[in-house]
Image 1 (cartoon, rainbow, N blue to C red):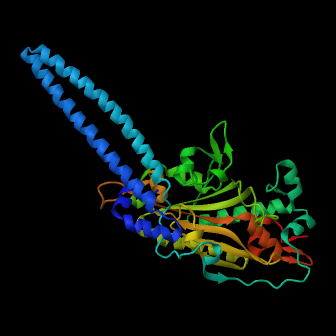
Image 2 (image 1 turned 30 degrees about the vertical axis):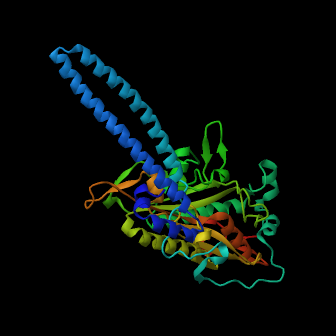
Length: 424
């Protein structure tokens, strides 16, 4: 959430920069400023009445002391009447502040100056590429066929138990999943990220803190009776560890990693690359989350991007890194890099990670601040996160790219984790 002060001091800049995200904020910003003017005038009216009440209270004491009880009682009656007015103004002020808050949460985060204009994925910029796209035999199979042939993932059994988008991993498929999770966590710890095991459900305050609510409630599974939400990513609970926290500037950087199951309704995705592991309602992912000083958050973003790149390189997968255009960015992000790997049988690029800097947008919602010797008041921290990595499409690419007449070859870095070097 942008701060009201920033919007007031940079009104035209906010409007201009949000156009990069194809968001016309002119009317909404005008409503925010108008509502804040109403808040100020109401606050002043309330303060003036409180000052009158204080003045009358002193007058009443003097009148009683002088023995003029009639005038004293009249003054008391006037004070009581003014207090009733103050109560009405207080209620009105609360309504105005709530309305102002509801307007502020509709404003997306401002895009970084490097974010290109564009409407969608076709306008994203390829920053760099790595690895070699394998040359496959004519009878190459997609991962959903390989999963069935080798009996490692059962999509139909998942439909029976739960529904589409909830696969069942079996045998070496399960061990490959576990191997990838442990590999990613170990590599993240080597890079300085502390492992966290978070809850898989969060409350509304947590969903609001990281920006899933009220923007993405339609994509989250809601446990109505308890008013809890199944997490769409470990970013939500891990970042919320620091909600309402004031750090010291020497605490930075704060770096955490977490494995979790993730749950997404994927509403509106019907027909969009839904075969096999391409799009699921439940999937495994390892996340990295960082809190950083505002002066160093883009250095941290670069560090996280480079780290995710090394994970993909160690798996031997062809990849590319894209800087998302304004039209393809999330509501909360200031700058996002997407990672895609190439799945040879499908002959398509699959997204496996997004690494983003949210600057102070989430921190303002979270009330996550830090103390700096140069500043009298606590300042908002910057938050970042990235997938390191999401498993389903990584598995899809590994199965498709590494299929051979002898079976599916396991990348060297995973052999010790799996306990086997081939799926036969």
